[in-house]
Image (cartoon, rainbow, N blue to C red; front, side):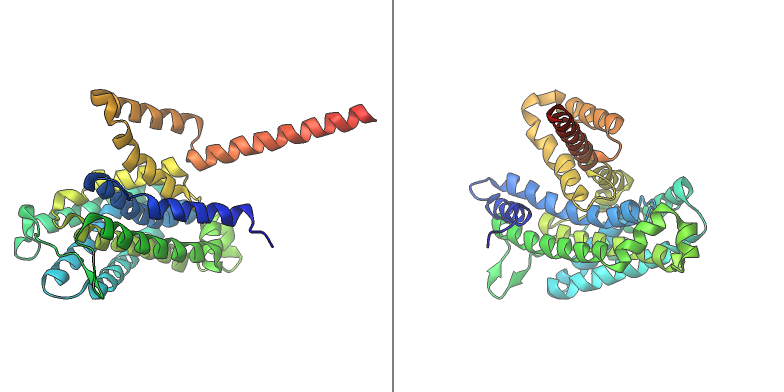
Length: 325
């Protein structure tokens, strides 16, 4: 019994992820860790935007909430395994509350609401110095140990982040393939029809925000020990737009979109460093051209090319059959 090409591809991807940091410098490993973390945050936004069709510009704010909760608890002596669930549940609860405006406003109006929330979180983090350290931030944030396995060095931390990423990816795969995932897609395609078929669109809208926010909380809980220093400027609107770009570039509404989009946004600028002052121009031009010719992102472009290839194959087969007749 032979394995299918699909599972062989999964195994090859997993092996590549495991081998990626070996022989690399600390900075490259740090960039790889950042890719894994932002992939988790983009996964959450992809569920909210790509599957449920609800626009959110507050993903960085939820990352900030998760990061600060984790930092405060671990600096107080609590283990990361205790701080992380608390960060996720806090973001889930706040996301549930933020979802209520989505019941009344849609599209760009909803984007303005979430933008305001992101700004509010930034102001709270900056001004409440007694709790957050204000503009000076929080330092030093400890890295966790797991039964003698220390994540203090970069490579061990990468494998810690990889395990968290794989667990998050598995959870997201279960969600999108469950009845909830189909309900989210129905909510995105036609809320009125979904409601007429008995779907509780209010609950699904709230859950879309809450679950997406929970994933951002996990990303924040991973980010805090990676950088070991957090400050409000790391969770501003520009970072929410960065996560939104990951979802859009990779392919909104596609399961693998956030992973590919995060790789483009986080890794591509580093690969273009050899161009010196031109790398941002090349990067921006690439994103601009992609959005013009493939609004569905890289995965949407791939599917378009594959559909065209299959159509050509069918046409050639029909011509061949006609010639034989």
